[in-house]
Image 1 (tube, rainbow, N blue to C red):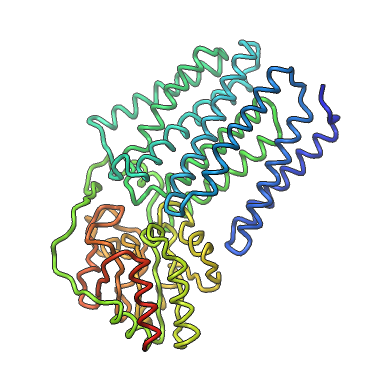
Image 2: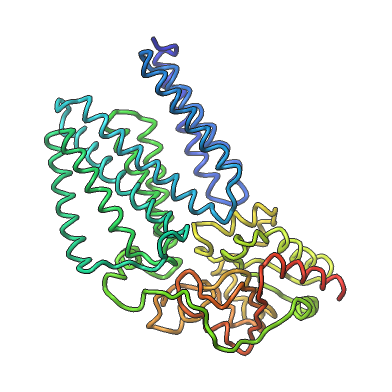
Length: 463
């Protein structure tokens, strides 16, 4: 017997929905992101507790639900507390996949309970939840494998990929129609299998530089699947939450694609058209100019304006705190106008650099978006590129044959001098060579970014 009467549970669901809306608003800006995250978590907690207090569970189902919650908490809490910022994109991909898979499983359970007695509207929504949720699950797993390095980050194009994709889409659409008409649990299982295969085929041709776009798009898929499940059950809170996630994920995907100067269709299927999308992991043996930490410190101390461009290598080295210390010293002790130039797809997930620098308590007003940083580049004395590569590669602007051609970059090569902090001469995630490394105004500092920046900090104190 449920503890909460229906009006009370409905009111609590409304409170949870409002929390989700406020959370999304908070997550739209770095200043309010932490508060937005807490509000969203509170809304989720209210929703879960309300479900337990307002649902008539029999003994066995109640214990199964409680055991599932405990297992989920035991697995997720330690992982969330220990995860390094380097691996955060992989965690986001996995969590997104879990959400899509859960929506698909809810759809299957509904088909089994209805046993062919539900109306067409409900079965249509359920078929959508199963298809989109299973695609999101499989696609997110492939994304995780690419980010983790278990699978190559380069585009994988199977022989006859276009034909395979069209045939697969036709079969999947036919199965979805059959499920929508019959409400059959057996056909639902077949749709799950087709959706999983479609999700894999959907993500395989995507190259490493485009992975942040795919993460955002799959997040939108998961939201749509949850909304479809909520519509079919019906459950207003699932519907609201799914619509919010689906809409925000779609808007973010389009914004990031625009930030890269490319269409979503081109990002997803460009490799199927051939061209130079396959990258390389080999180190270049071309000669470059090198600099020592002492050289960097001396130049920085006498500069007027410095722009720091962070990238994934900064996260790998966990050097955000040391970098913040360096920028703070430049601003306070040497009167240098030092800021951070943030590219929208730097790192391996949307907003990766914003999250990384927020962890080091970098003031938000020092984070300058790429479109605002570029006009300042001709008047910038020094650009420090720390662990970034593709987002400052002039090939995106100058080489029509490049796989990243058309992607807006931070125009570091327009500045007076460039110091490039890299571990080695291996290319970036896109797998292409960066001509900025060989520019006469560029000097490279090789080694772990944290160790190199620590040495620069020490040398700066002696200037």
